[in-house]
Length: 113
Image (cartoon, rainbow, N blue to C red; front, side, top):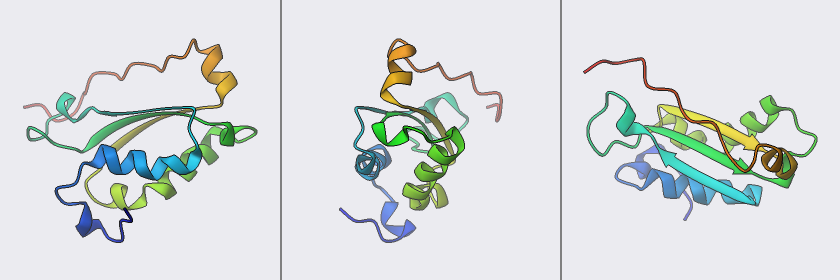
């Protein structure tokens, strides 16, 4: 599926779109967590995501460059429904050194219902 405009994202499963687009990084590990429920948003929102991606393509790449590549790949989602994107991007060696674990997200400090 090719997404050509932000309008086509309405009603879509955003996590599935993110997963599809991040496949270009040939991940050894990929999790996409919808953390919208932890924020002051309507029920069933798809606005806040955490992505953990492990790829050999990150070898020799500074963290900022890794993030820039993800932002470019997800530009439609970030221009539309995705308000926040937490990225945890590792090489296979870094992932193994972390014990195959990503950090937990902090509690939301904004909004307030």
